[in-house]
Image (tube, rainbow, N blue to C red):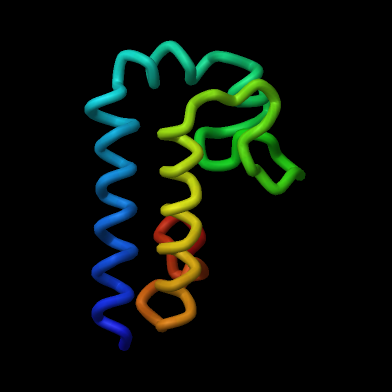
Length: 93
C-alpha cells in the first residue's frame, strides 16, 4: 500500500470535511436547499444526478466542490488499494 499517498488523501478529505461540516456550517445549512447548488433530485454527494459534477450551475460553494473531489479521490483510491469494497456496504447486504 502507498502509505504516503493514503496519508495525503486522508489529510485532504478530513480538511475539506471540516470546512464544509464545521467551519462553514452556517453556509452549508443555507445552501443544502438551494436548487442551484443541489438539484431537487440530487443529494449532497451527487448534487446533479446523471451529470459528472464539476461545480457549475451557479455553484460558488468552493468548499463543497473541494470536499466532493477529495471524497471521490479517496474513495477511488481506497477501492483500488482493496481498502474499501462498495458491494460490502451494510445497506446493500
